[in-house]
Length: 72
Image (cartoon, rainbow, N blue to C red; front, top):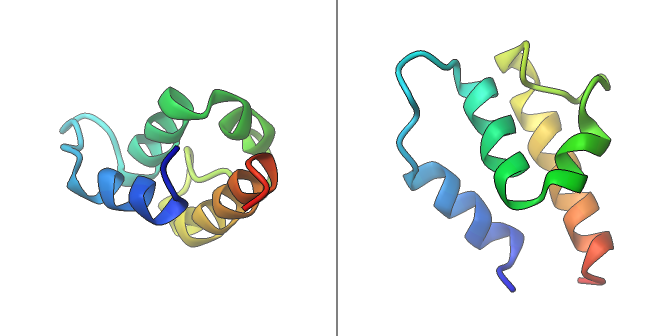
């Protein structure tokens, strides 16, 4: 199992498709590896899919939920 920091590093090294904004890419990246966490955030005030401005809140929430899920 990876740590959240390893997941974050993988995300930062991933290639963002040209047709996606950063927030869309981030949400899709997390959804691919942790769909239950992404779906828990979907539609909340921390969902960055429609607003890049929510990236930091999104990543903080992913970190929190990931640590809870795996008791880290």
